[in-house]
Image 1 (spheres, rainbow, N blue to C red):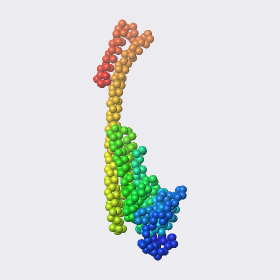
Image 2 (cartoon, rainbow, N blue to C red):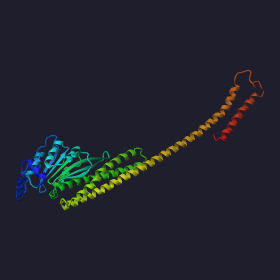
Image 3 (cartoon, rainbow, N blue to C red):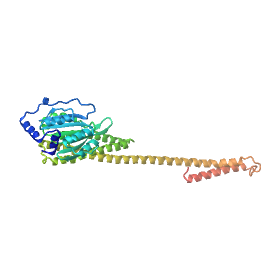
Image 4 (tube, one colour):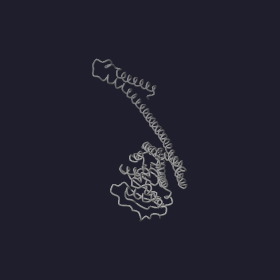
Length: 385
């Protein structure tokens, strides 16, 4: 008998001999009928136990309303399996589970704190698994991530969720409709949950692929907001990559322990199928990240080209403006010369040269024409006119 079982029996005042006797009796006794065991009791307000069930022979035989009731029924139902589903439990409830099922304190600490990366760790006969669920929000075009922690032992499964996703109620209904699957043990529950999480990645991949197609259109359309969207989508892809890539190594570790822990052959095939789907998702996500990097490069190039065209247009406009300024300045200088001469000879002074000269007026007009003509020739040579 394992240390886990010995501590559990001692905690409830039972001896190994009584436990063995109970098992021997169970081998010749009929399977316990569902009505013979307590049904689900009303859950108190704020209770984190979403669903707790005892399964025997692949069928639900009890639905305890509390953790203590679950422990009691599990001890009374030999060769049974307990699946306890929790939603954001407090430290007191997790401490109770740790004492009952001999869960490692480090795993309990991770389950309390949450925000863990996907991983698989083995503590004796208990597996601790962290999975990242994901779902695509069409309304906001964003990926929402959830987290579920699993404690998988020889005769118990404890699931701890810290978000709405994944919907484990659907997983429970699925395995309950397939007693043959559920009768394969706790590994079957682990497979069903992993399969649900991985299947949930498909709509996310489709949503991200559609977003990338839209971004490509916006890039070549010249949408000024596309750079921000590329950045935000890149962050989502990276987060999705962190949720999916560790699953490849986790499933490899599970496959490595198939023979050692005597996993059912059908479950082995099912887990290999999940591994194939995970590999496909990871490859697509890697492709998304590279594609977004290329799109960002193309967008930067197009933006640079657009800026160059704008600078070129500004330079052309500035050059044309300079030419106009030159012409205006040249004509202003030409017209300034006769104005200056006329102003000088228009002053009311008696003692001025040429004021009473017979040829004074023709001289002044000729001087104006000569200065204007000279300036015109100079500006023409300078290409100002």
